[in-house]
Amino acid sequence: MSDLLPLLDHAIAAAFAAGTEILDVYTRPINVELKDDRSPLTEADKRAHLVIAAELGKTALPVLSEEGKQIDLAERQSWGRYWLVDPLDGTKEFIKRNGEFTVNIALVERDGLPLSDLGAGSPIAGVLYVPVKDMLYFAWNGGGAYRLAKAKTFAGRSAYELAAQADRLPMPDSPKTFTIVASRSHSSSETEAYIARMEQQHGQVALTSMGSALKICLVAEGAAHAYPRFAPTMEWDTAAGHAIANEAGKQLMDVTTNAPMRYNRSSLVNNGFIVQ
Image (tube, rainbow, N blue to C red):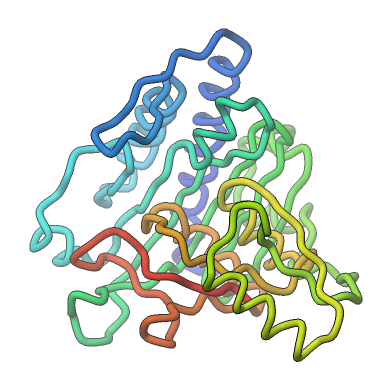
């Protein structure tokens, strides 16, 4: 059995605990602060970070979290394995109360490729939890990718046991029309060009939209064929979904390097990418 499974157990427990904190705040008036980059921050982000850090701390692996302290580049690139966390991905969706926000927890490992500004590691396990829907996505290298509904009813069971109760990704039925996760109203010239290329290749193209890292999960589960993203994202936005996509037979490709996205780069801002 994979040595990743005990670590995945902690990640799933952390995601459930974060979901509880997030939903508690969600039921009350939401106070919003602005971080230095003008992005929103709520009590839910902070509380989710604290419970995740506490649970993952039991693994003795370092944690790099959006809401944690900044860590020196040399220190973090020396890590063999570490947790990469977004305690609440989709804070804007959380504030809008549309339910399209997630808890993202990835396990990243040095990948054996040369250490560079372009990265040091790749995700080897991922947990993505949707608190409002109580939907859990998870995957580990060589073990497959899964989607579990009513997930908290299974809390306390191991990841191996959860996989036996879950749907294996991708799902068997995918849309016949080539479907892209994108929005014409909030698009970019690069996205428009990509859609045009797909229209040339596939004829009719359908567009769908979703908040947060759920966009990656739509491709992983087969509800969409591609997710192009050229606007800025951070490493913690994509790593958990990337691990899930990998195990579902998909790829998250860095459009700058034309290779799978690597993590623990000198800048934690992602390059543009396409999931397909």
